[in-house]
Length: 229
Image 1 (tube, rainbow, N blue to C red):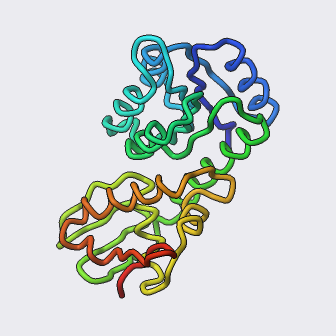
Image 2 (image 1 turned 180 degrees about the vertical axis):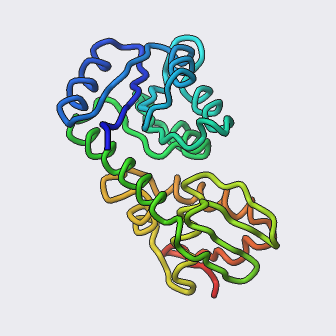
């Protein structure tokens, strides 16, 4: 298997050099872009295995670039790690709702960065390995792990990677109560730095998309969430 290719998008040259140095040392092939426009053009020419995307970019910002990538069927499955100096919760939540897989705030530790990259790529491989797994059927829902698909009454329900993973986590053990951080660990790995609020936002978005079936995702006050069996 060839080396994994990573696209680093940041307008700060020193950040690009730092990330490139550390990822190259770990055996990755790194390409760089200094703007969202340059990054989108690069992705059109060659699809990377993962994108590290700064949110604060000249011209088109990182959130708009992520939105375009996730809207395009040919690029929607590329994992995205957001890299940003903006630690505000709203920015993180917006990026996660768009379908980003993880986020890191500046300043960051190179060791944390490489750990997050490994976790996201490992999770991507793990999803691909589920193709032969039988679908999970509960109530009116069908969850197909390999196809990354949820059917409600036979009709597909569009979910982000994180929404799908949360639903699968809860539905695999109906009646079991998961704390917010247990949900984060199951979906993203222990290194994932997330606020309780962002988990709540993901759950709220999932319930909205489930419509009347959102009632099956229950809040256990003071503890977390469970899927009603």
